[in-house]
Length: 316
Image (tube, rainbow, N blue to C red):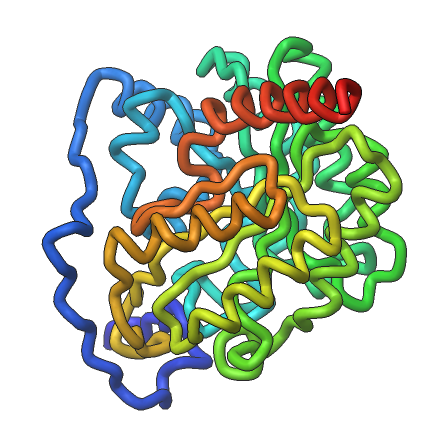
């Protein structure tokens, strides 16, 4: 008798089937199997690392890995939340790997990264939500790669008190936490999280260290309307968020949250213009925009835009 295979998303087994809509012509991933792609894959595998590129089934993986860009997923491959949009495995995670900070630092060094992105699964099972582990990964990466800038994409550390401050203490160059969707959809799309708790996290990070760039992202096509998106923009600017990403929701399976619709290219352009008018230092808005897509190029633009803004304010 063959052993029973555990489903990737046990909480979705009894969910209704939501047929996946065919992608329009303007949503096409770049397939680039270059030498750099296989080099990145080899380094990730040799160090027994997990990447969100693989676990979340990112559509940009071949393009990014061909540029030696990989977003490292720390604290395991299993998440304690059950977000309706996400393809990362859910369930009971394993213990933390105490050697992971050194493995990440070593991989960043071998890939010769100028800018690296480090994210994680949610770890509600840990007293600090994994904040101290984030701290150790950032510190070790800095030690071995002093010229590399570091961007973190963190969970919300919900009900973990001030644990997030440990991550801020490590002083990453960019602190990203995605708001993901509009408040009215949180119960269906992000049931384990709280909209205003995420806003408060972003606001507090900026209050503690104004030099850290703060960043957040939202998906469209989940069932929101334009006015709700604009309200999220306002909320993020009130929290002094510097960088906003807007991307198309792509339904991972028939058991995930149903796709409402595909946004057209001109709609992404319009949202970008509106967001820029609200004062974000940088806005990335396109169908395939993801949190860490073109993160290194965007970081360079962020720094430039901050300098230009400071110069303009000094003149006025």
